[in-house]
Length: 509
Image (cartoon, rainbow, N blue to C red):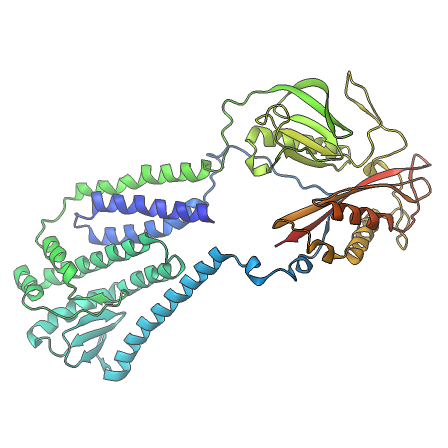
């Protein structure tokens, strides 16, 4: 989200820079109005664009289908102090939004109060509110607020001016930016945009009224003869605003811009093109110099990462074992498109054989830049041919290759889904989350991996666990040993021993 906000602000800076340097001095007022409105909207849309023809093609990600037990995080945070679970950045954002929304309501209330206090004189095309002992002049939709102390000789021109604002719905423009100020109160460019479009509104109205006047000089004199009060409400169109008077007069006395200068709006084309290119490619990791190398396979033997063999060319190495590598895990979004393609090829290869495998990516052992595919094996690795690296399985048979899976008590014989659900329910019902409270675990998602086997008699044996704390490891092993005896699995008509790795996930706030 922060990256998105930064891109929005950056794009708005560029759009306003183009406006200030190339367009603001021209007399194409209506076009400038739509430029400001459209670019304000585009700055929010462009960061979301991901053009397939520009981006590198990224294959579809595949999800591991192993049953994962997710424990309710509520039990973990019950004892945590309330301030430990507060996201202060989010809190600051919503406080700011609430504050600016209240400010908006106060401004709106001031306008409503003027209408109710002084009444409305209904005219043909507008509603007039006369303000006693005031020299203010402003409009809000089709309501024109006019100070009674303004000389009657000037009131007609002022009303004509404010009618242009009303007819062209300028209040909607200002309210749009007022809304942006509520949701992006921290963005200075919203205020810049509102200031620019307020001035454009005055240019438009001045141009229309001055064209109807006998002499443009007479209209200009109306702006200069007196000093008037100003109502400080950001979403109303004010006739007398001292900071804008000089700019308005300069623009009225300026010669009409030549039509050929409208070509300046074509500057949007390369600007938009560069923005789309930036947003489409910003999340991609460069792999121009990435080359295939001999793929090295490693095997976990008693905690030692043993190099087994080198085989075909690839972008990543392979590591097979029960324990996760000691190096840092790499998220799929951080892989290059070449590495991600290779990852998905491996996943697809297992899926085509009807096998599910827990496949993750870690930094390399010998070279961190050379990433490693970690295959979390749910069966014991009995023998390895060092010359080919093939796995020879003993009594253990992978779950996905069984003719009949082990049957959990109460399930139909060989019901795989029931087995998954029953094991998950057993863990959820029997895992005491209070054990995680006083272990000093850091915030975030935590995983426990429990390895066990169901032997030929259906008993749970060889239980091992890996957890972020020794106490959790011992507790998880004791819990798995309490699993009920089951009907053993079968492979080719024979009862076999089946190995599992059960991931248990919980959240620490």
